[in-house]
Image (cartoon, rainbow, N blue to C red; front, side, top):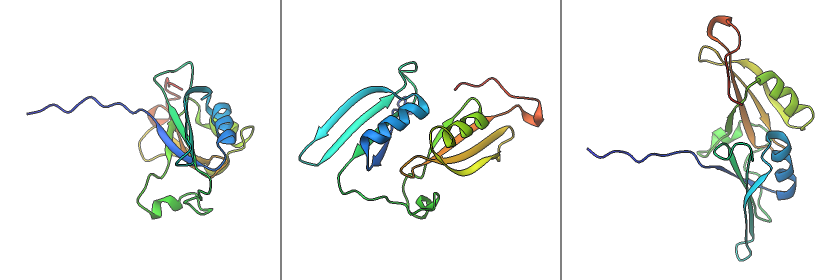
Length: 155
């Protein structure tokens, strides 16, 4: 019996209209201000940047890809991506769900989609926001089961 290879998540890629604006937003919103890579493919008309958090080199990476003339795939309804078979959102574990939701929808300008609420799994809570171009982001926080207080969480 063969053994499956070890697999680890590397990055998520988002197609964006305004590369500099989204690069600045993801840096401000999530601390993704380390540029791991920039690439221009002039023949394809594509520019990319891969961002990460300098304090967490093995953590979240987001690749932003800009192609002039691209159009948003989803209409104003943030959950519209579920109507087609594609990736629908990026889920992020946050240490303090309420604080993250307030910060993102306040000082960072994310659009609130779904306020913090209990999840299906005992002790899980979630919320949804949309980045400035409408990409859906799920924020996940946890609490101790049965209201015993917050658990120790990584941010």
